[in-house]
Length: 439
Ligand SMILES: *[C@@H]1O[C@H](CO)[C@@H](O)[C@H](O)[C@H]1NC(C)=O
Ligand SMILES: *[C@@H]1O[C@H](CO)[C@@H](O)[C@H](O)[C@H]1NC(C)=O
Image (cartoon, rainbow, N blue to C red; front, side):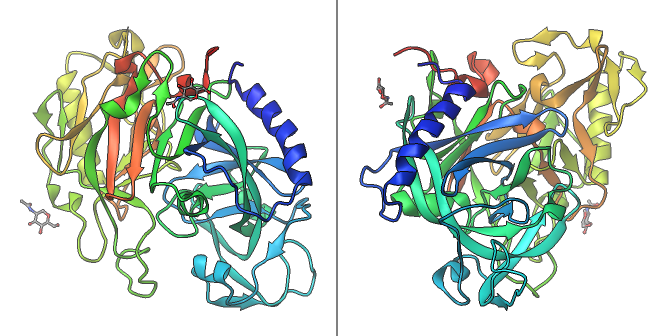
């Protein structure tokens, strides 16, 4: 069977009918090796969207992937219908999982999102400039696709998955048809930890974001290797590792909410372009005691941002490498653009200088090739796909364009990030995992 998004859909629909009629409260008997979620790129917003099945009867829910955020939230205001919805009673274990100490009274209900004696927590939409509200903590059944690392397997259910009820207003800025966001952050309520716990899986997950539009999805893998791509085998053999760093505070510089950030940080120590060091004051690359500085990985930023002093030095160093090529009028949000004919296509994208993020050790670097550094804007223009981050509290936010078609493994057992650089080097890409051929 071809493993296209369509068959993924059909498989779900037929299995859900079966599952929803059986008792949904017992834990699954067959422990899956790993689970896989499809992730598609929305071309108009550059957001990466996954789809889960939730509720009874189960329906598909599209959610924007937010790597660093803790919880999963959906719009409960509009058409949330489920026989298995439960609100989390104040001070019950789901409230503790959500880190919630607050309790609401809501007399417009009872309805999903509005119940009395229910704990609440914050709901954030990072895409729309930190749009925040407070929502009810709730539980409902979720269904996920299992995999043995190479072939899709049975659908499994997670009864009582803990999430947060948002409202329609906070959906602003998300693509049409998307009804919330899913956080993969390092917190007990995050999708990875809830799934690891439900199935007793090793605490590792992989993401492989597709650069191609909807019909060619990438994937999130919850669980350990292998990550077998057709004709390439297990791509985990290409992984290099760097430690994951925890920021001590959710909001740097404040002890007010002194819980550690759930986001993923790594140590970038310097940047090279074509092997040549980019000259800037590197002190901000090191996170300080208050949590300022450092390098974060983000899927809600479409392009990598750098604070202005680093960005300016970076752009200058890039121009230096291409000084004989005339620039063209920059196209926002970029500031350095060229005629595309000077950057002919290669196996690893437009032929620009390669960029190395030098990591915790001099000999460990993340090499970025044209496919992840140069953005085609219209037919004849390519731009350097990095954006001025102003005076952001992190030095560098590695955005989704720079991680597309790279396989990343978040190994939370060893607190390290595994990265492959572009899979195009190995004649494959993230969407190929889903293009299963006949056995
Ligand atoms: C996964 O299962 C398929 C059969 O369903 C088998 O052919 C394949 O070898 C298995 N892969 C792994 C990595 O175990
Ligand atoms: C680099 O920046 C830090 C912090 O702003 C400053 O203390 C230090 O003096 C700077 N180093 C140089 C060489 O300019």
